[in-house]
Structures are given as C-alpha cells and as structure tokens.
Image (cartoon, rainbow, N blue to C red; front, side, top):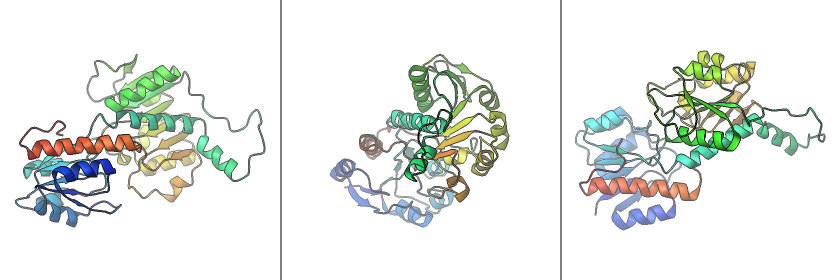
Length: 318
C-alpha cells in the first residue's frame, strides 16, 4: 500500500477515505510543516496532502535529490506555499482543489462587504461593551451597499461568483481588472485596462486574484491612494497581495474608509495596529470554513493523488 502523509487534520470522512486507499500518516499539528519536515517527508512518502502554511519551498524540495514523493495533492485552490517550479524540476506533480471553494469563498466576500460597509463589527463591539445609548437618527452611519459599484480584482471563478452576488442580490454595477481579457464575466460588467482605473471607478473593491510573484503587494500605497477616502477594500484571496503596512496606514489616516479581511500577510500573525482599527473587519481565514466544503476539498485532493498513483493525469494539475 502506498504511503500518504497528510500534514493537517482533515474532516473524518476524508481521513476514512484516505485510509481505505493508502497507508496514512497524519501529522496531527495545527501549525504548518517546516522546511525540515518537508524535506524528510519527500524522501519517505509516495504522496503528500499539504495545505496552506506548509513550507514546500524551493530549498526544502531541492534538498532531496531523488524524492520518493510523486504528487503534492494540495488541499486548497491557492498554492503559493508550494514552489511549483522546484517541484516540477524534481518530477513532482502539484495539484489543487478549484471549484469546491468558489461559492463558500464568495459568500465570505459578501459577508465582509456588508460588515465593513455597515460597520457591523464595530457596532457589535459597542453593544457588547454595554455602550449603546439607544437608537438615534444619525448614529453609526455606514455605506449603503445596494446600487454601489463593485470592483473585482481578478475575474476568475471566485471573482465571477462575487460579481454575480453583487449584481443579482444588490443591484450593483460591476467593473473589473484582469490581466487577460474575459469574454464572459457572467454578469453585465466592464473590464477596465488597469488596476488603478478600477479602484478609481468603484466604491468597494474585492481582491480575488491568485497569489503569485506578479501579484505580491499588487495593492500598495499608490493603489490605495487611487481608491480614495470612500473606498472599502475586501481581501478574500491571499494576504501578501495587499501591502499590509500600507493598508494599515491608509486605514489609520482615512485614505480609505474601511477594509474587510479574511487573509493576512503573515498568518496567523495579525499586527496590533490592524487589530486596533475600528474601520477594519477581521475574520480568521474563514473562506471555506463549512464542513461540506472542507470535505469536498479533501475528496478532490484525494482524487488527484489517486490519479497520479494509478498513472493517470490528475483532474486538477497546476
């Protein structure tokens, strides 16, 4: 029986399915696997099921001359924690789990839009502290969402799902930036020719672009200045797409109105300055945090791994 290393505890249904096919070793820790753990595992296991936070760096992968591992069946659509080029150079196939995460992540995007625009987090804290004096006509005024313009940064599966929700549910106009032309965005929408053009045109911007060296700090101080003092920034992609320090300064100075974040540049570390801001809604990476979604992700990761072990092309190679 082939040996499979699973780097984090997964839903029971997934672990049972894996155990029926593989000799499974579960790394029962909440932290990501270190480079040393990764290097050792690549020499000991036929397949690995990693996830966000595991350090499959180029150095960790290249440290093994002839790895036993044939496939990294990533649990998640994002794979910026894996040096894919280094893996390919050593003959390791990398896969991911697109599709399974789309709707759940888009739902969290809408949660953050509504919470940030309507100051829900700030106001709940006021109420819980016993500081609410009762209803008043000009109290806790936020941004009305219906009819506003949303800017989608990255019109892939998740970006399109957010656009559908904004258009159909809230009558929002949709503009978007994508590095390649999008023939069918799925809703009435305008593709603009630059990131800054989108930020200048929208009230709410939602970051859904994949993390890569090209998108690192894509949302920087200059982009935030283009957004303006009424802008609400939502990030449901990866934390390092946004320059976190520049975002903090923009929120502190009122250069933008607010932010809704589900991801952070150095997870799980969230800077004190960011946590102190009342105009920032902060969630602990909840994008796919529903049992049926996480189960579907695990089953898709297993499907990819089994395909490689059987000599077939995996359904979701990256």
